Length: 119
Image (cartoon, rainbow, N blue to C red):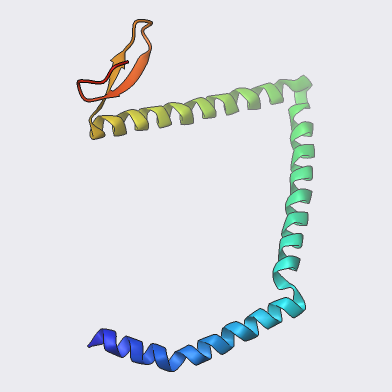
C-alpha cells in the first residue's frame, strides 16, 4: 500500500519537478553559474597554491636550511608510517581472505591462493 501511495504522490509532483528542472537549466544557461563557479574556484586554488609554495620555500630556508631538513625528515617519517600501515592492512586483509604468501628462491614473497599455486 505504501508503494502505491508513493507512486500516486510522485505522479502528482512529477510535472512540478519537470518545470523546476527546466527553469533551473534555463537559469544556468543564461547566467553561466557553473562556469563562473569553476573559474573562481580554479583561480582561488591557483593563488593559494602559489602563496603556499612561496611560504614553504621561505620556511625551509630558515636557520640555514635546518628547518627544511627537519620538515623533510618529518614528511619522510610520515610517508613511511602510512606506507607501513597500508602494507600491514593489506597483509591482514589477505589473511582474512585466505591468501597465503609463498617464498620464492630469492627469498622474496610471492602471493598465492591455496595449495596448488605456482610461483
